[in-house]
Length: 229
Picture (cartoon, rainbow, N blue to C red):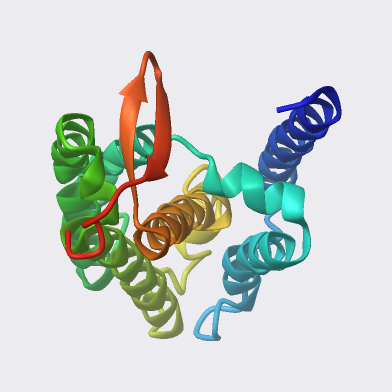
């Protein structure tokens, strides 16, 4: 990597991290101002917009900005899987159901789905460390797809619960602070990490590459026979 490439890479990382922090700040400000609270019984359009807008921006940037695309495709797969381990916190949804804060229609599927991804994330990390070719394999792809499916189901059931009138005496709990940060920030972020992992795995698979660990970094190069992993 020459000097100009290093400067571009650093600038892209700075922009990406700054954008992430600004996104979180905006979500906090809007959530505190109850900007995501909709009409009881109506479709929670503000929350759906909060989920979809960052994802659209992410995908547009990936396909139109080469430096951002390189940044996404060079992400540490074990780090991205490790962040998904935080989803074991889905246990909190079930706890909130027990206390009558969230409806079971949303809490049980969302909670158990998140816990399943969270508890298996360390296994994925171990598999990547022991056999870097795991990144190009079917099991890694399925795990990421299931992670996305869980989030789609959770958002859908949350919207349905809101439309069915849960919290009709007030705002739907997932639309107010601090819970609103889950659909407004963490759900899109987790989806982005899954998408980044799938895109990187696709690149490795199509290029016939396999990776090895050099210190803390994952280095990839062409090796025959990976496509069938």
